[in-house]
Image (cartoon, helix red, strand yellow):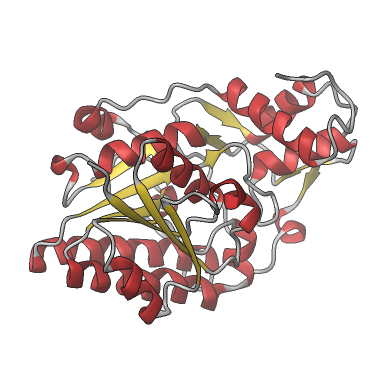
Amino acid sequence: MASTYLITGGAGFIGSHLAEALIERGQRVLVIDDLSTGSLANIAALRTHPQFHFARASITDRLVLDRLAGEAEIVIHLAAAVGVNLVVEHPVHTIETNVMGTEAVLQSALRYGCKVLVASTSEVYGKGARVPFHEDDDVLLGASNKSRWGYAASKMVDEFLSLAYVREFGLEVACVRLFNTVGPRQTGRYGMVIPQFVRAALTGAPIRVFGDGEQSRCFCHVRDTVRGLLALVEQPRAIGKVVNLGGTEEVTIQALAERIRTLTASASPIVRVPYDEAYAPGFEDMRRRVPDIGRIGELVGWQPQHGLDEILRDVVAYERVELGGGAGPGPTTR
């Protein structure tokens, strides 16, 4: 039997892939997105589908949000400030969107008895030195004059508030901490490293590595992320829990740049850029970010199915089309 899902931020990178997956499963999908970072192009193929409905509005527009929540059984809350550039340059927007938006979503969900999955972020681990990061680890955030930590703190508040709704009101809510989801449709406009590197490599522009390049990350294909989100929202044992979702193949940013340059057969130079030249004041980086995915494995049997090379090939193929079908050096990748 079909259910009705409300996806906040559903015209964004992850949200649009999630909407497609739900429509393919025969579900009804409602999307609310103000298009501040999302795009109508991401959902263009869905707009005429009878089981899909889009509303252009902010999640802080409580009238629109309430109307949509009243039609839904399940809410997947993805709407948030995204990307390092946006977070550092617009700290007020970041904090207000994350905290006030999540509060509005939870209030509407409580009113209509919706099940909720709230997307959080690996940023909440801050400067944590214990690797891999486990959901129950203590966290260490930087000083409040560094706006990146304002983003991390706002997402922690989202988690605290969500779990409070579980404990106080019995609302069915789970929180999922996403680790660097990547794939087709992700834009480099707000600081996402892989699409930035790929586009530079394909156009022959310098591949700009910030800092010393030895900071490391784990990347997760958007298809794996969507599969994990849908499994969690259907798992009653996830209610009241915080769950990591991410890949575990660790790579330094310098090695990532070299890998992309090789994959695209690019002649682009790899250049180092100091952080103070790359970002507005208020930026501070973390050296490593690796998830412990034992909890999601135990809950729903999830493991990533797509490795880094496949992620990169998919992004390269997408960017080639975006650039006009094979622009730049290098062989085809699909």
